Image (cartoon, rainbow over all chains, first blue to last red; front, side, top):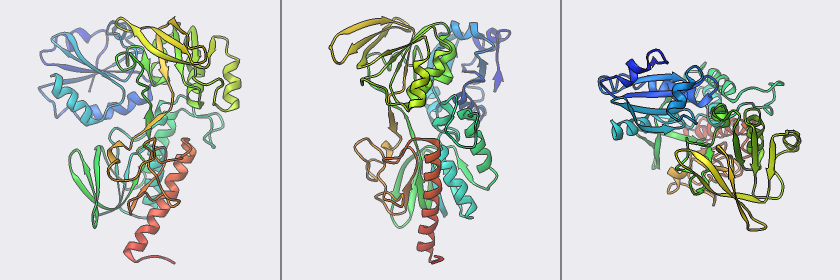
Length: 104
Length: 308
């Protein structure tokens, strides 16, 4: 999964031609560390349809605040430069697949 | 066919699986997210002996996991949807069916949703069930913590270091938490106790801006402007998927006999999902060990390899 930050958020997420799922996480957040391996295991299943990225809210407070992040782990799906759907809390793989199928 | 399936890998399931693996039984585990359980949401665990300075919940879960992974235990990241009991036991997950001789259900619980007006709508926008995850977003702000048990008070103590002002709102006239926690929170200057009270509405525009607090004795309501609501008012057991299969108590927890066996033969249960469990890491873990020993005896009996 690709790490995004202030330097490449525009090019990697907002200007992406396919939808991007961004995992908003922080090193202090235990549940965030549980969701990461689940997402890593999904990258290949969605290749060419959805990109997976993670953003450390501790290092990128401005982006987190721009998108109203107040609870993590949070997954936001970006399509054509805009956030179109969001889920918060630890999710199962099936939960994330359902979320993507419903919103991509 | 596997000897035993462990469903749910929090402290109880991980301990059960560790014991079963050391008995050289053939174990398969199911965990719909990642091993860890509710303790990963706890900032600091101070009552698990062996860690005199306390340990973070995430770190403790990682240590449990590391110890388990030293044994050849199969772990499936699949959600169990149903269990069937015929001559053998079939476990039905989102992607496959598995046949096993016995099961330990240790699926735990999650923080209860209270159904307050606005609660669901503002989840992730000011309503939170995880202080360690979200405290940082409320630096210098005003929050309410709902609940009066150990979890609520522990999490409130943690949150008080971040926020400007914290209201601890509890429906009873005194806290239920243990004395050591009560003493600690009573000494914190930015915490205000609001007892005999509940929140009956969470409101705002795009995020939480206020709550309505109702005093249950005087019946009067008051609007309080704030930025966040943290809810730690009890738990909901992860046993709904089993309600037509085995006996649950009125709270939805799994009823077991003294030997940790449920109302269905060969199906055992341990930890927070079990009726009348203590809901502590140490006891969940202890129950997992005990259930594993009972399962091992049960398997000896059905295989005819009993030692007695």
